[in-house]
Image 1 (cartoon, rainbow, N blue to C red):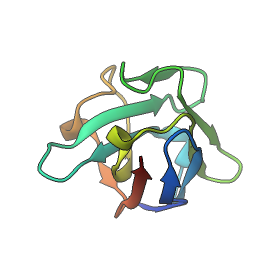
Image 2: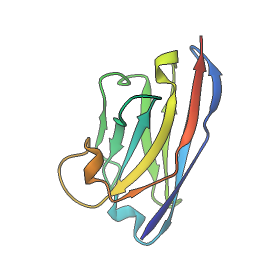
Image 3: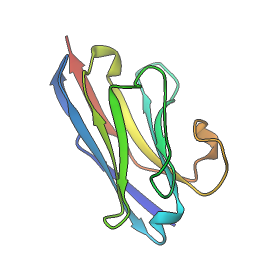
Length: 124
């Protein structure tokens, strides 16, 4: 079992930055690939970014590529999402998720554990 707790969300003006954190408890955090997803009101949950278990490989959706950076610190059992150049379209609840194995990083159904989410609101 892995428990995930997100933090760092909030209200920010367009063009600003936020750093989300996801703290994991449980066993063998470094066995899990980690992903960030987001869900805006009335929309489906969508992939944002993912990082391999070692941290050596990262993936991004096209809408956040070059603005967001995912990273992890296995010594601290934490994954981060640095978000720069935010715009109102980034407003959503952001979730972190953990999975073991597999080559796919983008599908919601392949993740085994989810956090409760943290709200990010970007004002224009």
